[in-house]
Length: 521
Figure (cartoon, rainbow, N blue to C red):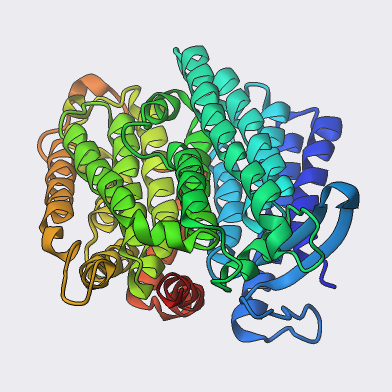
């Protein structure tokens, strides 16, 4: 039995404790945090390489099962209640497992000079890295729920202690909204535990084992009736949708982003939101396929409304960080649209969008942090002519805007194109052959692409070009601790944009299984 996934939980957890015990100075706390996060990233890279290529099978074999899950660990925890310690990854979770320590590490490097309670700050980042990783690799519903709830604690403190002027309001709003979503999701978990797991479990015992539920869903004879699946789907969809977030349950996010420290915003947008999208693909589509087939239009409506509404709101923003926050909401609408397509390419595009958006939004929020520290403001109308004084910053800004707009050659284009193709293609099969239900309305979400280009080009024109605003005083360009994260992220954005095949090849098999599960039953 493999140990590699447990190490992805243990390393940041040990690092969290070591930072609290030994990180008595800013430099020591930071260095310990970076070392443990770097170690986690190395393990994630090793696991990804083995899963995709099998190059390390003699050392850490992936041992994929019939559903494509590798590195599976299964230990009894509380057998009498059906609770187990089960970990595993597949093509849906593995990109996010790699992204989690990457963004945590880069967030720490970006916060190199954090001097306010640095020991607690770097410890919180390690704790939230551990919890988010646990969500992506847990294959027991009870364990999944423990990690899901644990994520709230460090993020609450990151916003509440190191946030901006309205940090108390933003942190409490974040906690209330996301916890309410978790409670509704919990009802779905308990419903599956009491009513579905005994039928699907070969032993007849109730179990939180997600593998039992995922395998059982492949057999139409074992699936619960549609009358059960639909309310369970709605409960899960609501819980995951709040975390995603989808309109109208999104209002906690802009406040949380604006008040959070830069590293907190990077983790919030790059990782925390991805938990909601991951849950939709893993649970709503993977365990309740008949309900997904019936309620595809619900996901499509929420996705399209989220894309268009948030894009229009971006047009009215003058705070650069708030603009990026609403842009994140709009781009999460692509994930819902991909899920609603019920097609292999659309589902794969939605999963790919989770990963690509994590890279892009990390750059954008780091840019917001840089300009706030350098110029003392994030007001777009005041940030004129930055290319003359901050050429490196302006270059990174332009490339990241193009990536978020979906410019061909950059990673955002690939996943967005897959979502639109899958939505047009998948809509034809939803109701009946030839009834292109979703495809007929594909021009509606395409409006968001045009609006995205409008607000990014407007922001670029205001901030980069023209005469420099001398009222800003002496501004500095990017420093080393900022250049390193930007270089790494932009390199990945370019490589994936030009050569997406490795990522697509990883994501496509589980996407095809989900599409086949929905239409095969």
